[in-house]
Image 1 (cartoon, protein in one colour):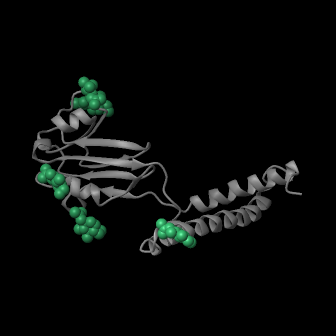
Image 2: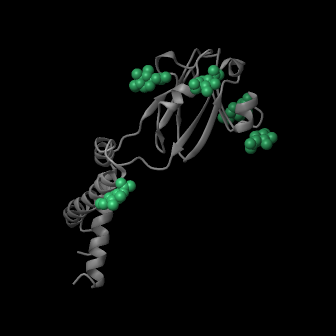
Image 3: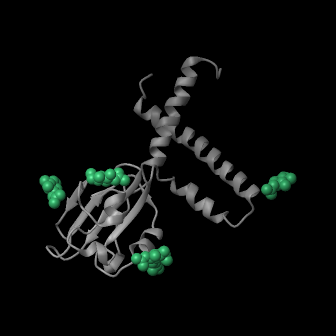
Length: 180
Ligand SMILES: *[C@@H]1O[C@H](CO)[C@@H](O)[C@H](O)[C@H]1NC(C)=O
Ligand SMILES: *[C@@H]1O[C@H](CO)[C@@H](O)[C@H](O)[C@H]1NC(C)=O
Ligand SMILES: *[C@@H]1O[C@H](CO)[C@@H](O)[C@H](O)[C@H]1NC(C)=O
Ligand SMILES: *[C@@H]1O[C@H](CO)[C@@H](O)[C@H](O)[C@H]1NC(C)=O
Ligand SMILES: *[C@@H]1O[C@H](CO)[C@@H](O)[C@H](O)[C@H]1NC(C)=O
């Protein structure tokens, strides 16, 4: 039965629909640079960045006094040397929301002199936000040994997959999913 092509198709279709349902509730996070201290001189933004995990779809936002400071996205050279030459982008509104659309490392500096007083931040954006259920369970088990953490993670994964299959099947039956 499992080998019949239409059954495989239904299974695949259900799995995709279920995965979409599981992934969709994940919300984008707005990471406010410097938290309540904002974008200002004399703050160690490396400490701030180390305290955050960035995923594709999140935002980084800069709050500062307009016309006094600004934000330039630069490459590693620009970050190290505090130069905006060949900048990738710039923002000046005083309340800038920047979408993190692609994974990878980003470099932001102030282009009005603040960079040499510490107004520079680099972040690493990760490809995918993990499903909330998996991350909660992983945290609960993180103090256990490698062995049991691994098996717990495997159980969560199979739970997510079979749950997704079930939910997805119901969901795709509702939508027709192309084969009815
Ligand atoms: C910021 O803090 C990090 C971690 O303690 C340290 O390595 C770095 O040198 C500090 N940066 C500045 C500019 O003080
Ligand atoms: C890191 O995050 C915790 C919890 O949100 C917060 O209390 C702490 O002040 C943060 N530290 C820095 C350096 O941002
Ligand atoms: C950064 O951009 C500048 C100007 O376009 C260029 O000269 C430099 O080689 C780049 N650095 C890196 C690390 O890509
Ligand atoms: C800032 O970005 C705009 C495009 O958004 C560009 O036209 C302008 O040249 C940039 N300014 C600097 C100083 O790089
Ligand atoms: C994992 O568990 C097996 C037995 O279930 C044990 O033999 C092995 O030493 C364990 N490995 C680690 C890294 O704890």
